Length: 372
Image (tube, rainbow, N blue to C red; front, side, top):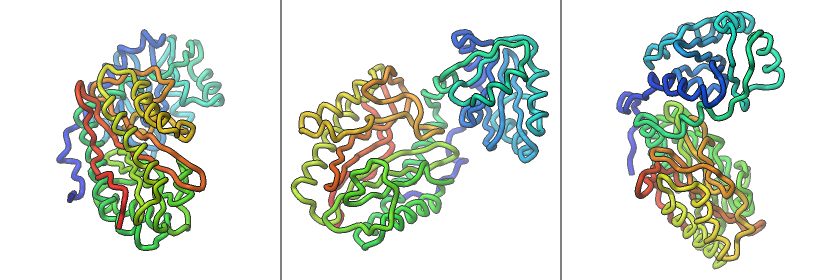
């Protein structure tokens, strides 16, 4: 496999300009007339603005973005590039609050309950004096579940970068390098191939560390005959990929190979269950039942998957308790695992685009256990 550095100009444009209209149609079901968006990933989704500080007030006919002086030029450029019409107010916190207050006289103002601290809620109560503050949940996130062509292309580009980076770094597993050294090389390879960074903190975990689902790379060298879990992803224009492969340097023991085969079978079953209109809990059940039948049910200690996009974990949830139903053009992971303390762990994960028929995997690195 060979991937040239990512060129954003070659990717389809994002459909950002249409999103505010879709959001406004969700106000009445959410019980609000106005929505204050403070989750920065949601601000980016709705406007294209990528700054590290800002609030977006969305009303019936217009929108107001507030941010500070660091982003005066950037904010205007990014909203214009996205085709988003919104007033921009620049200033310190007090200036931003005044701009928000002047924009709303009397209304039900929705706050993103998951992104507003108690202290912020108290401050906003003073800002929107005379208004009713309404807690909302998932109003923007529900829109984000279904990806447009530009979003899907960026996730697929991130996955291709990760595939190529792993192919470059894989020989290091047999070189006696430490988990941390291998993880660092993987992160560097993704940057060199055009990613803006890692999708999350890269996991390289060998031997007993592989039995810890979210182990951090350590100074422990990767040894022969032990399992190595590599869980990582790339980020391209804000959008992320997520992939896990498990390897063994040399031949594994019969016990370790059995664990691998069980997880591989479970992952295949989960991938086959991914389709539009299917309850996400059924995908979890497809994986979990295979692992339970093999006697490892108590060793599968996390959910089967999650949505992926601007955040590495977003809707829909793919778990036993999920109430979500998969939708066409959602992007989810399927990542069953088995973890046996002191022996090792196995996790195999792909990022998938949901379709009406067979799910399309965008992470395509081979799933071969043995590394020579």
